[in-house]
Length: 79
Length: 79
Image 1 (cartoon, one colour):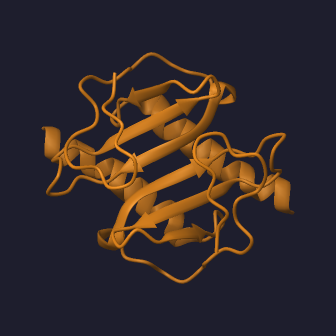
Image 2 (tube, helix red, strand yellow; image 1 turned 90 degrees about the vertical axis):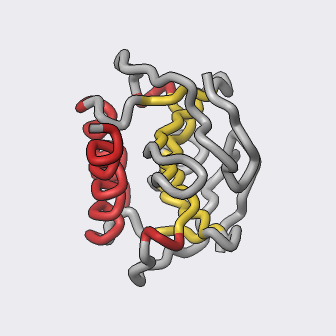
């Protein structure tokens, strides 16, 4: 579950994180919130295509992999 | 400049992208939009702490580096 605040986040938004793999095809976007004064955790929130926000575990290997994969995908579409 | 749509993006949001380095300390969050039917480009939009959205160039090496750095930072805070 996540406490979504529009714009500036005032505190941690993720109560717990999901470590189970979610296929990137189901994702509308991925938001990365650096740690800061408002929250000491890095938070990664994927918004699924059905509108559901899901907190992802920043330390799960698959999370890093799909972020890299999505960004690498930019090279294919533009070249 | 970016055409920010709340929630689901209907078309490309970035008219042009910024390739100049922006220090992650100035960033509130980073949103990654996979390419899809709505837009054939991968789009990465950083929202700065002053609320300004900035479209980043997904192919700029520093963009990938700061995303990796922010995520890796999660290991330090939690261990």
